[in-house]
Image (cartoon, rainbow, N blue to C red; front, side, top):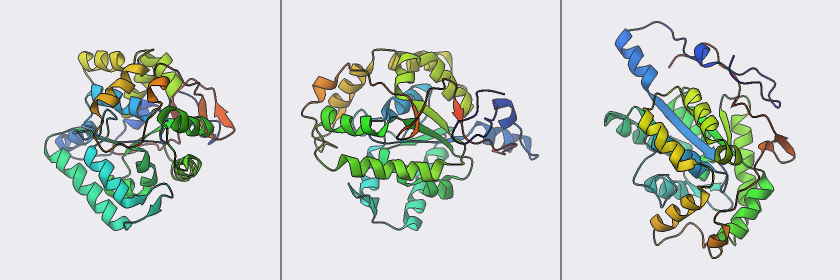
Length: 288
């Protein structure tokens, strides 16, 4: 069995071999289904989700380009999410049925174009967990990007110069993530682990998603997230940032090169130090 149980769910992780067991059906259709991946990257603002999305992009996952700035998130999706949810209160403005329709059509268009692995990333997507299940199905793979709440709030204020109600914004997203992912299989990735143990975390992602990137893709992903590359990530954001900004990063340059002391974390005050991938919980013999 690969990995260990999460200390919060107390349920065993599911090994890659067990997750590969499929029910009967036409061989051609089954091969195509096995090779298809629908991936959602969820996390608060300043949680390291951009690094994970960038890794997926370099591994060959279609993350919805053209991107918003250097965040490896669909520019179109970013605009849709801000129509759906009122920031910073994050109150629903568009009914779920419409959100599900849009998400369904979006991924169908990507897959009909011949894409095997499709992903989405955006902090506000954390509010759309049930929407994604309805639109993409139970086979959707969820990656949660973790960082202690207080640190993410401080990073928004000091690192990006955010002047809104960061506590309300981040706390609401955290509560939504906890409610949706409790009892659901997902992989937790912590930013500090990714930055300091890139090869190990990359292998966890590949194993969890059960994808087969080539050597060139793996090398590109490692080169993107190698230790000390955070400044490069921030510079990419600045170079690609459109005129309409997500924040007003007056003090962003002072944040370049600083490494956040992230730890395994589920809720404020409940931090994990386990260095194995966290799959929560197992769903045996899941067909794809």
